[in-house]
Length: 218
Image 1: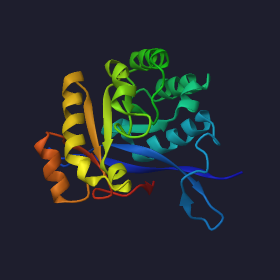
Image 2: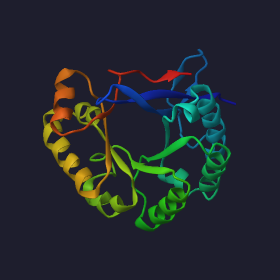
Image 3: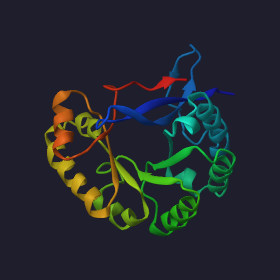
Image 4: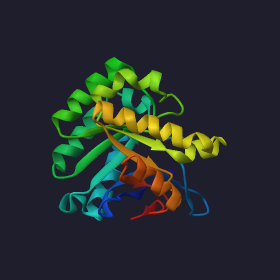
Protein backbone atom coordinates (compact mmCIF):
# COMPACT_ATOMS: atom_id res chain seq x y z
CA UNK A 1 0.00 0.00 0.00
CA UNK A 2 1.38 3.46 -0.86
CA UNK A 3 2.62 5.52 2.04
CA UNK A 4 1.12 8.94 2.65
CA UNK A 5 2.17 11.85 4.84
CA UNK A 6 1.24 15.46 5.31
CA UNK A 7 3.77 18.11 4.37
CA UNK A 8 3.07 21.51 5.88
CA UNK A 9 3.51 25.04 4.57
CA UNK A 10 3.47 28.02 6.95
CA UNK A 11 1.04 30.92 6.76
CA UNK A 12 2.59 34.22 7.78
CA UNK A 13 0.99 37.34 9.22
CA UNK A 14 3.00 40.11 7.58
CA UNK A 15 1.75 42.58 10.20
CA UNK A 16 4.02 41.08 12.86
CA UNK A 17 5.94 38.50 10.78
CA UNK A 18 4.63 35.58 12.83
CA UNK A 19 3.64 32.09 11.70
CA UNK A 20 -0.09 31.91 12.43
CA UNK A 21 -0.75 28.46 11.03
CA UNK A 22 0.01 25.74 8.52
CA UNK A 23 -1.70 24.16 5.56
CA UNK A 24 -1.37 20.37 5.58
CA UNK A 25 -0.71 19.11 2.05
CA UNK A 26 -1.09 15.41 1.32
CA UNK A 27 1.86 13.71 -0.35
CA UNK A 28 2.47 10.15 -1.54
CA UNK A 29 5.80 8.36 -1.34
CA UNK A 30 7.14 7.08 -4.65
CA UNK A 31 9.26 4.01 -5.36
CA UNK A 32 12.43 6.12 -5.33
CA UNK A 33 11.44 7.32 -1.81
CA UNK A 34 10.64 10.84 -3.06
CA UNK A 35 7.32 12.49 -2.22
CA UNK A 36 4.83 13.94 -4.69
CA UNK A 37 1.17 14.81 -5.11
CA UNK A 38 -1.06 11.72 -4.81
CA UNK A 39 -2.34 10.23 -8.03
CA UNK A 40 -5.78 10.62 -6.47
CA UNK A 41 -6.67 12.53 -3.34
CA UNK A 42 -9.51 10.07 -2.71
CA UNK A 43 -7.19 7.05 -2.78
CA UNK A 44 -6.81 7.47 0.98
CA UNK A 45 -9.97 7.96 3.01
CA UNK A 46 -10.62 11.16 4.93
CA UNK A 47 -10.63 9.07 8.11
CA UNK A 48 -7.08 7.90 7.35
CA UNK A 49 -6.08 11.45 6.46
CA UNK A 50 -7.41 12.56 9.83
CA UNK A 51 -5.10 10.05 11.53
CA UNK A 52 -2.16 11.59 9.68
CA UNK A 53 -3.44 15.03 10.64
CA UNK A 54 -3.44 14.03 14.30
CA UNK A 55 0.24 13.09 14.00
CA UNK A 56 0.98 16.39 12.27
CA UNK A 57 -0.85 18.39 14.94
CA UNK A 58 1.10 16.61 17.67
CA UNK A 59 4.46 17.14 15.96
CA UNK A 60 3.83 20.84 15.40
CA UNK A 61 2.26 21.21 18.86
CA UNK A 62 -0.32 23.60 17.40
CA UNK A 63 -2.59 23.15 20.41
CA UNK A 64 -0.01 24.89 22.59
CA UNK A 65 1.08 27.50 20.04
CA UNK A 66 -2.54 28.30 19.02
CA UNK A 67 -1.53 28.11 15.38
CA UNK A 68 -4.17 27.02 12.88
CA UNK A 69 -3.99 23.72 10.99
CA UNK A 70 -5.81 23.57 7.65
CA UNK A 71 -6.39 20.76 5.20
CA UNK A 72 -8.21 20.36 1.88
CA UNK A 73 -11.39 18.64 0.79
CA UNK A 74 -12.70 18.26 -2.74
CA UNK A 75 -16.38 17.73 -3.48
CA UNK A 76 -16.15 13.94 -3.60
CA UNK A 77 -14.60 13.93 -0.13
CA UNK A 78 -17.09 16.47 1.21
CA UNK A 79 -19.99 14.34 -0.04
CA UNK A 80 -18.65 11.16 1.57
CA UNK A 81 -21.11 10.45 4.42
CA UNK A 82 -18.23 9.57 6.77
CA UNK A 83 -16.19 12.74 6.22
CA UNK A 84 -18.03 15.05 8.58
CA UNK A 85 -17.97 12.51 11.40
CA UNK A 86 -14.22 11.93 11.00
CA UNK A 87 -13.56 15.67 11.27
CA UNK A 88 -15.74 16.01 14.36
CA UNK A 89 -14.01 13.09 16.10
CA UNK A 90 -10.66 14.79 15.46
CA UNK A 91 -11.92 18.07 16.92
CA UNK A 92 -13.46 16.41 19.97
CA UNK A 93 -10.24 14.56 20.70
CA UNK A 94 -8.04 17.59 20.05
CA UNK A 95 -10.34 20.38 21.13
CA UNK A 96 -7.52 22.90 21.54
CA UNK A 97 -6.39 22.60 17.91
CA UNK A 98 -7.62 25.46 15.72
CA UNK A 99 -8.81 23.65 12.59
CA UNK A 100 -9.77 24.99 9.16
CA UNK A 101 -11.21 23.11 6.20
CA UNK A 102 -10.27 24.41 2.74
CA UNK A 103 -12.74 23.56 -0.02
CA UNK A 104 -10.97 23.14 -3.35
CA UNK A 105 -14.25 23.01 -5.28
CA UNK A 106 -17.56 24.84 -4.93
CA UNK A 107 -20.22 22.55 -3.42
CA UNK A 108 -23.93 23.20 -3.72
CA UNK A 109 -25.49 25.77 -1.42
CA UNK A 110 -27.43 23.07 0.44
CA UNK A 111 -24.27 21.03 1.00
CA UNK A 112 -22.32 24.00 2.29
CA UNK A 113 -25.07 25.21 4.62
CA UNK A 114 -25.20 21.79 6.30
CA UNK A 115 -21.42 21.37 6.35
CA UNK A 116 -20.57 24.81 7.68
CA UNK A 117 -23.40 24.86 10.22
CA UNK A 118 -22.10 21.69 11.84
CA UNK A 119 -18.44 22.68 11.69
CA UNK A 120 -19.07 26.13 13.13
CA UNK A 121 -20.69 24.53 16.16
CA UNK A 122 -17.25 23.08 16.89
CA UNK A 123 -15.32 26.28 16.06
CA UNK A 124 -13.96 24.81 12.83
CA UNK A 125 -13.50 27.37 10.07
CA UNK A 126 -14.46 26.88 6.43
CA UNK A 127 -12.39 28.42 3.63
CA UNK A 128 -12.93 28.50 -0.14
CA UNK A 129 -9.61 27.83 -1.85
CA UNK A 130 -8.33 29.23 -5.17
CA UNK A 131 -11.07 31.81 -5.65
CA UNK A 132 -11.27 33.13 -9.18
CA UNK A 133 -10.08 29.93 -10.85
CA UNK A 134 -11.54 26.51 -11.65
CA UNK A 135 -15.05 26.11 -10.30
CA UNK A 136 -14.46 28.79 -7.68
CA UNK A 137 -15.34 31.78 -9.84
CA UNK A 138 -17.41 34.54 -8.29
CA UNK A 139 -20.71 33.56 -10.00
CA UNK A 140 -20.28 30.02 -8.69
CA UNK A 141 -19.44 30.93 -5.10
CA UNK A 142 -21.28 34.20 -4.53
CA UNK A 143 -24.18 32.46 -2.77
CA UNK A 144 -21.74 30.44 -0.63
CA UNK A 145 -19.81 33.37 0.82
CA UNK A 146 -22.14 34.12 3.76
CA UNK A 147 -21.46 30.62 5.11
CA UNK A 148 -17.64 30.62 5.05
CA UNK A 149 -14.97 32.33 7.11
CA UNK A 150 -12.27 33.12 4.57
CA UNK A 151 -11.17 32.88 0.96
CA UNK A 152 -7.76 32.16 -0.59
CA UNK A 153 -6.46 33.83 -3.72
CA UNK A 154 -3.57 32.13 -5.53
CA UNK A 155 -1.47 34.42 -7.71
CA UNK A 156 0.45 31.42 -9.05
CA UNK A 157 -2.68 30.14 -10.79
CA UNK A 158 -2.80 33.21 -13.02
CA UNK A 159 0.94 33.03 -13.65
CA UNK A 160 0.59 29.38 -14.69
CA UNK A 161 -1.96 30.34 -17.35
CA UNK A 162 0.12 33.32 -18.54
CA UNK A 163 -2.37 35.80 -17.11
CA UNK A 164 -0.09 37.47 -14.57
CA UNK A 165 -1.12 40.88 -15.89
CA UNK A 166 -4.58 40.25 -14.43
CA UNK A 167 -3.28 39.82 -10.86
CA UNK A 168 -3.69 43.46 -9.73
CA UNK A 169 -7.25 43.63 -11.04
CA UNK A 170 -8.23 40.26 -9.58
CA UNK A 171 -6.59 41.01 -6.26
CA UNK A 172 -8.46 44.31 -6.00
CA UNK A 173 -11.72 42.50 -6.80
CA UNK A 174 -11.29 39.70 -4.25
CA UNK A 175 -10.02 42.07 -1.60
CA UNK A 176 -13.24 44.04 -1.99
CA UNK A 177 -15.30 40.83 -1.84
CA UNK A 178 -13.57 39.84 1.40
CA UNK A 179 -14.35 43.23 2.92
CA UNK A 180 -17.97 43.14 1.73
CA UNK A 181 -18.62 39.71 3.24
CA UNK A 182 -16.39 40.26 6.30
CA UNK A 183 -14.11 37.38 5.32
CA UNK A 184 -10.48 36.62 5.97
CA UNK A 185 -8.27 36.65 2.88
CA UNK A 186 -5.15 34.52 2.45
CA UNK A 187 -2.81 35.37 -0.42
CA UNK A 188 -0.81 32.57 -2.04
CA UNK A 189 2.02 32.81 -4.54
CA UNK A 190 3.79 35.84 -3.08
CA UNK A 191 7.17 35.75 -4.84
CA UNK A 192 8.96 39.02 -4.14
CA UNK A 193 8.88 42.50 -2.66
CA UNK A 194 6.64 43.76 -5.48
CA UNK A 195 4.03 41.13 -4.59
CA UNK A 196 4.33 42.08 -0.93
CA UNK A 197 3.80 45.74 -1.81
CA UNK A 198 0.73 44.87 -3.88
CA UNK A 199 -0.69 42.88 -0.98
CA UNK A 200 0.00 45.76 1.39
CA UNK A 201 -1.85 48.13 -0.95
CA UNK A 202 -5.01 46.10 -0.40
CA UNK A 203 -4.40 45.42 3.28
CA UNK A 204 -3.79 41.68 2.80
CA UNK A 205 -1.52 40.57 5.62
CA UNK A 206 -1.88 36.76 5.61
CA UNK A 207 0.53 35.22 3.09
CA UNK A 208 1.45 31.67 2.10
CA UNK A 209 4.11 30.90 -0.48
CA UNK A 210 7.56 29.49 -1.20
CA UNK A 211 8.95 32.90 -0.28
CA UNK A 212 8.14 32.13 3.37
CA UNK A 213 8.61 28.39 3.28
CA UNK A 214 8.22 25.41 0.97
CA UNK A 215 5.96 22.52 2.01
CA UNK A 216 8.07 20.33 4.28
CA UNK A 217 7.79 17.03 6.09
CA UNK A 218 7.56 17.38 9.87
